[in-house]
Image (tube, rainbow, N blue to C red; front, side, top):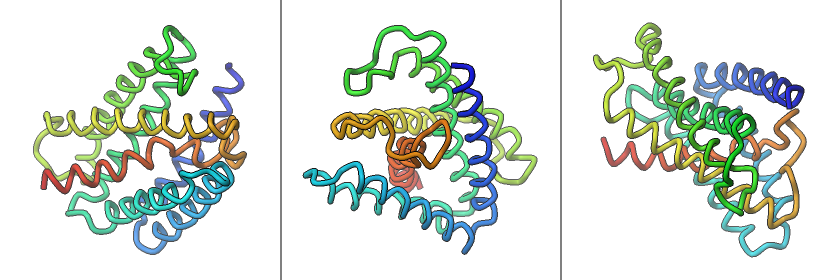
Length: 218
């Protein structure tokens, strides 16, 4: 478990640094980066869903999901960078918290669809995402990412819990498709994680959900 956790943490750290670079840079660099991720994700989905009835709808969903990523970073209000990082960090730490709590505390299984998911993992996902976002919001003022005058209000909490929930549902959904396809991972591109789709399974659901929610709120 320890070796797997170290490998997973190291690869996650590298991915986060690389991803943050392109997100903060924005513009053409970001668009190029996301386009590459989209192509890799589509390829992994293609290999996983061959000859399945849901293969074509999956392509459209991935397209819709990545378009929402483009829109959130490039076109969404004055706080686009803050909002994008808010969603990204919520998903990342939901995944990390779920993994750590699930491994340490184990306990009752959440669903038969994804046997590794536990109730303790759900709690860990919420807890880690809340802690991470509180720290992020605090320091986002320092870096002028968030121009609001409130530290952490009810709207941010609702957004955080909603994103974390949808991210966990996305994780379970992709796990279901992997189970149907009788595979453990969607690929081998990321050490300790498997494929790219294994890593962003929650995000591809959380970003379009967040985009729609933010449109309603604004």
